[in-house]
Length: 305
Image (cartoon, rainbow, N blue to C red; front, top):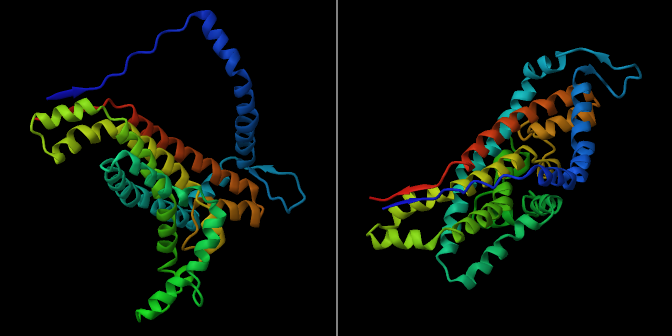
């Protein structure tokens, strides 16, 4: 049995309708230019200058010197490694766990879908509140986690002050906070799958594993691509829990790209170098986004034999 899902081509707009559509989009495009294009151009200009806010001299043009300094900076590569850990946690931990939970909820009666809404609570809490909440949980002396571990005779780890435990502690918070978001997206994708295609596969004698791998997963590919795109972009912007719990420490063990850029720009006021860091991040994120968007555009093709 073969199931093919093809998108119908969008009807072409006439010249008058196309111009009318541009007029409708004009206010939004103007706001986008004011809020995104101009700051981007300004950041590009600052990134090629030796612009230090605390030094009262005109910013000197240095060309690509800031970018060369970034690529030779060991702290930059350390922050890249921390960022990659957050992305790896999304791909290899959060996404599989979210897909499993979404499949579980999809198999429950429809009224049980309210459980997905309850599961979403960690995601809708303000990130600053999440940080303060987990700071109490991880507290060395008075935290409930160490209290329970003490009762079990497992000691009292210094979660966010340990070079070996600080990053895993933050990854655990990120998992708790954002996996429900992926569950919601994947659950919506599963709910939108054509039931007649799935039923036809079952009637033809396909077992659950065949239906999942050859029909459900290919049809879910666009949803999975969008979910990964959103979470990867969010991983690059992880800041709140780092700022509240570890401030990038101990040492630079939890200092990701976003936090390292913040330190250079708002602690050392080295705006030229911080702008170069931001532009490099923008290029990397654009490349990753392009790859993930390509994943969402692949047609859903299923084949069960």
